[in-house]
Structure formats: structure tokens, C-alpha cells
Amino acid sequence: MNNYYLAPLEGITTYIFRNAYHKFFCPMDKYFTPFLVPHSKKGFSAKEKREILPENNRGLYLVPQIMSNHADECLKTIEKLRFYGYKEINLNMGCPSKTVVSKGRGAGFLAFPKELNFFLSEVFEGIGNTDMEISVKTRLGKEDAGEFPCILEIYNQYPIKELIIHPRVQKDFYNNEPDFGMFACAEENSKSSVCYNGDIFTAEKYESIRLRFPKVQAFMLGRGILENPVLLEQIQGKAVKVHTEKERISHFLTQLLEDYMALGMGEKNVLFKMKEIWCYLGKSFPGQEKTLKSIRKAERLDRYRAAVEELL
Image (tube, rainbow, N blue to C red; front, side, top):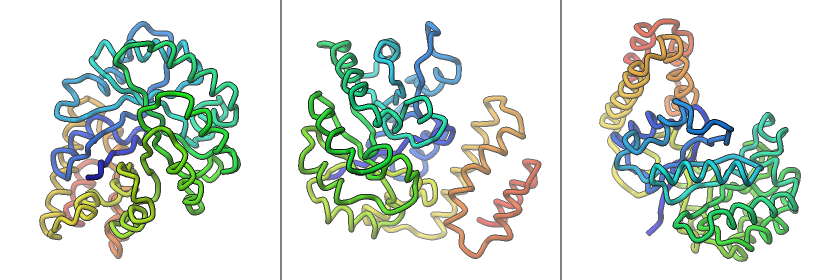
């Protein structure tokens, strides 16, 4: 039986999104926080704390994700997370953002294999015999997929719980085709269990990847879920009625809006959050460009609500 994870997307898959998705659609086996960047503060910021507080993630298997290239800072953040009861954390070696990469973090860290090896050595030594487990989300390299065999050799030196692989390099961002040949190499040679991530937008695409890599038992879904929240149900062969689907999307969006409003973010910021969701979700409504444009152009919540109601 396969496991399914919701990918972390910065600023989008917040605890508010995770809870609303979990309530109205097919639950994921694991959810991951958008990355936490270690800092010198004694505790978490108010925003970070909201993301990881157990009471804000009831009923979810949540894995906090850390983005760092300094082992000491990473270990301090791991210790803070242990305080809140977490037993698994994920290290981000896959973010392709230029601002992240320019600091040697995320997928940018992959360009420095010696430093990466030292970092992992220090982190695993630092957690010692604790019950903390570490998974890694990675790309194939920074410039060329040929970097990956060397990177995989480094990963194989450590007791990584799971290797979540997006089979592109950093410079691809989300362009070009995933490198299934190199993913096959990872599946064959990784000492850790492997999870596939990348470009699963339809049940048919999922099935083709599943058949190509029958040993893989975990799949991470990201942009595909944002575009089509019932994707996991379609993958699992569950019947999805169009009327019920639209009704659930409506309830889901209402829940998001109300929960963001409850944070006191202000109408303008809440509208920004909702429009960001529609940048993805709008792709599930072909031929509705006029109404989608009304959603994008709405400057007040009442106009936004009217446009969404018309669409759904």
C-alpha cells in the first residue's frame, strides 16, 4: 500500500491550508511544513510557532522541514522541535529559488558536496542516540543531473529515514521533463527508502510513474493538489461527483478565508492569500477565464466572494 505526502510550498501550505485540506479532501499520510530557517532567537517566532504547534495540527502527521547549511544552527532548531514532541524532521536540499540558492541553501547546497557531507556528519552526530529521525528532500544537483551519483554516495553514508527526490536539477526550476533515468539510479542504489516527487498532475501520470517504479511506495504531491484538490481520490480510484467536488471546493475556500481572517491579517492580505491559491486552482476551470479574471482583479472581499460563487 502506497503512502502519499503533501509537499511543502512556501507561503501556501500553511497549517491553515493543511487543516482545511485534511477536513474536506482525501487525507495525506504525511504533511510537511514550509521550510524553517534557523535563527539566533531562543524560541520560534510567532509565525513559526503557529506552524508547528501540535494544537494547530491535530490529527495530522506533520514533519517540520528545516533549511540550513550550518549544522550547529540546524541542531538547535531540531532541539526546539523535540521540545514540541516531534520525532521526525526533513532537511531541504531541493528548493530551487534563486534567493535561497545564492546563500548556498536548498538545492544550492548540492553544488558543495564536501560541505554537504560535513553538514550531514555533524547533524547525525549531533542527534546521537536520540529518537529523532531525519529525512531529506533533494534535487539531482544544481547544474547537471550527472552530479547526483556523487550526492547519493554522500546520502548513503547516513541513516536517512527517507530520500524524497524531485528528479530535476536546480536550474530547471519546474521546466523540462523530470529525469526518470537518474531517478531509476536512485531507486536502485539508495540505501534509504525513496519517495518520488514531481509533476504528478493527473491520476494517469501517477499510474505511469507507479508502474515504471514499482518498488517506490511513497509519492509526494504538491502543485497537482493545489490545482486539483481531489487528485488523491482520483489516484486511489475513488468516484468523484462533479457537484460534490465543487461543493467541497467551496467549503474548503470558505474555511481558508475565515481562518485567515481570524488571524487579523486584514482584508488586503487575506485577498492576496486567496488569489495565490487561485493561481493554481484556476487551472481546474478551463473556459472560465472571464470569471477567473474577476477573482484576480477583486479588490474587496465581497467582490471576490461574488466571483467565486459565480464560478462554483
